[in-house]
Length: 186
Image (tube, rainbow, N blue to C red; front, side, top):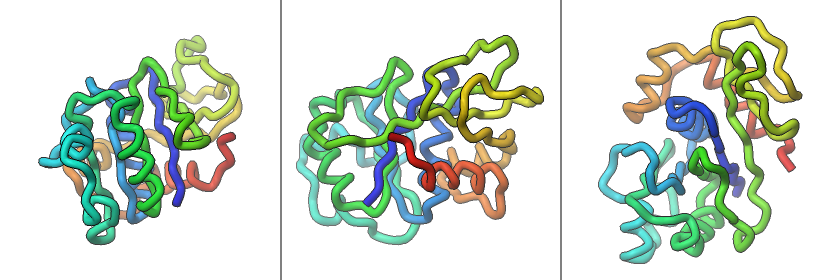
């Protein structure tokens, strides 16, 4: 079981799409939104509801191959930490989406690597931490201000597919974001 925290401090669209791309690149994975103000991902079950009702066995295991998304539903990460820990322990791969303000304390779950997704903008406008950064190309040919992979620009069809719950086929952005899983982020 592998878990990554996806943190996108500057770009709301990238913040909604990057966790879905990370999960889709794995084949079978769960995206858990820890941001009470996060996107309204489709689906009836939310993290808040799962905490209120308690997770059932079928919630703790993938029902089939593919990406499952657990929208937030208005609960803090701290209030959901036990359920999140159970999901991380039982799913093959989990992406934890956190608010732009920064990753919440997840100390009770052990060390979950934080991967910052930052737009690669001219003038160093999105310069950030020197470690744990994935740069998203915005169309300019720039050298990143710190080490980290640079994702190619995502096609509009890729973004639309991911937000619609469909895995894009043969997509270079998806292949590139998939390489994030093979890096050491600690």
